[in-house]
Structure formats: structure tokens, C-alpha cells
Amino acid sequence: MAQSKDIRAVLFDLDGTLLDTAPDFVVVVNRLLAEYDRPPLPAETIRRSVSNGARALVCLAFDIDPEHTDFEPLRVRLLEIYSEHLAVHTALFPGLQEVLDQLSEWSIPWGIATNKPAAYTLPLMEQLDLKPACECIICPDHVAERKPHPESLLLAAKNLGCEPEHIVYIGDHLRDIECGKQAGAVTIAAAYGYIEDDDDVDAWGADYRVDHGSEILGILKDLVEAQSLLGR
Image (cartoon, rainbow, N blue to C red; front, side, top):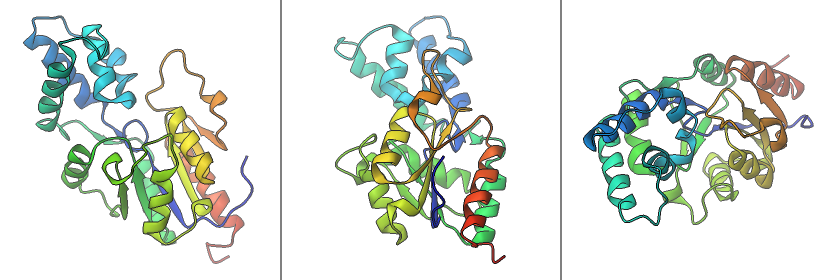
């Protein structure tokens, strides 16, 4: 468990942490498979790989590696389909709206640090139009080194006007927790996210683990109250 820190911002990984994007990816992957007269994959099989991005989904769906001659055309086509299907079924995970609402009451800004390219992240967030509004979005386009390198959080801290150690970072992958720890942030492992069968969330070394989005609020309340940021 992390020592009490002065929490000035909360950042989320995107796919599998803040947003349940898997339902749209299930449609996209199976539509691509149908174009090649292949049978659909079970939704849960696709869901577990969403956090690893388009490359992993192509490898999964077509059982090929990135060196295969068909890989790049398949990846490009998958992303074309996805760009037309960004926010049809995607939504906040249960409990996350309450977290965002409470952060607004505390006047604590929230943001996103993701490995999802800006070409998909920004229009997705625009279409969802979440309230209260996100105050910082860091994509791999904005940094030289993507997660697990800490640069994303370091840049977010700079943009939000706080030190990295005053950030809480929440993610559903080892690379998210490694990124947060290297930056000096408080880390929360989102075990409700897109966890692969052979992964061990407890082995990631996060300061906290949550199995449902609603549990995040209790952790944040404890951290905020410890610093008397509630005015008590």
C-alpha cells in the first residue's frame, strides 16, 4: 500500500481501464474475419487481447506473426474498420462515472495516458463527450517512448502542473503499473480489465488492486481524506 500522498491528479489507461472498448473490437475483428470467409471468434477471446492493440488482435484472429506477408494489410484493414466503429458500443466501465463526478467535486483533474494512437483516442473521446471533461490526454504520438516507459506520466504531470508523485495512475496491464511506478505515481491495478488468462495481476506490484470500477472511489477517498483535501 502506498504512503499517503497529496493527490493532485488522477490518470487512467484507456482500453480496459477507463473505457470498455472491447464490444466494438469484437464487432471489428469478426467483421474482418468475415471479409476473409473465416469463422468469428468468441467475444471473450477477443476481449482479453484488446489492451495489447491492433497488432495483437491481428495475430490472434489470423494466427500469424507480424513478419507474415499478410500481417500489415490485415492490420491496416482492421484499423480502417475500427475508425468507422469507434464508439458504437464503447462506454465507461461501471463505477467510473461516479469516480469522475467525485473528482470534479474535489477539483482534482483527470486525464488519460494510453498507448492508443491519437488518431483513434481523440475522436473516440470527442464522440463520447464525457463529463466532467478530461483535462489531459497523452498518446504515443506525444512522447518518444511509450509505456512502460514513464515519459507519458511525466508529460502528463507537466501538462497538469503537478509532480508525478502526486498522480494516481490506474491501468489494466503490467506496462501501466511499471510506467506509474517508474514515474513515482501511486498505482492502481484494474483487475476488472482485459486480463489475459496467464497473467497475474497481484504480481505487477501495484500499490492497490481493484476488481470493480466502484472500488477506485474508496481508495481515492482514503488518499484525499488523508491529506485533508476534503476540507475536513
